[in-house]
View 1: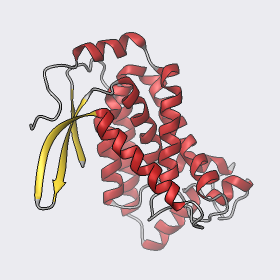
View 2: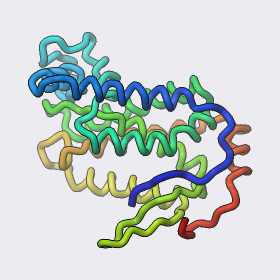
View 3: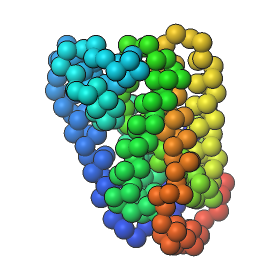
View 4: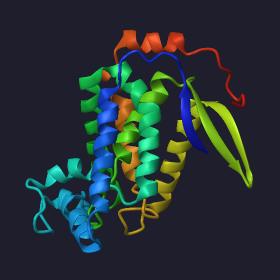
Length: 245
């Protein structure tokens, strides 16, 4: 199930913070593409968030930022490949603008960064505090955005493509189903990985997703603007769930 777009006519403020985050991520990835294999590995080791460094407050790689906790922020803007950044930016593009409108620009930026921090800490202390594998990617921060979206607009309709063998079914589904399915998959994968001595499961830091999502769920009430949320909710109409588009 791949989300393509959310159906709403409620957006009123220009989401320049969300667009700026996308641009920074893309520019950072283009810079990664310009590096040789060895240079890229050094970049990721220095600026990725390494659980063993964070949990013990030590620097394992020469040239890493000081204090080492700064890697939590630098890691948010690094990605491991085209699919990694493409999937993350797709979700941020679809859901981030609505959450920014509901929060306001400054609060949205603070919220996004806090989501990334919560994600890194959750992956570190649940997924493996002694792991030397660097964590990179914006997915933890984006998971916080998804957590906020599912509470603010659970009935908001999302256009998705569902793959059924060789068939591709375009359909509109409520956000609570689309995002709910995603987070249940993350929790299931994360629980299944417990006891395995690795910071990630299949190359994906699933506990980072869970941590970011939890941050979004728990803090959305602090960051939201009631009037903006009500405006979006009142204008979300004209489509029916489960209809093809």
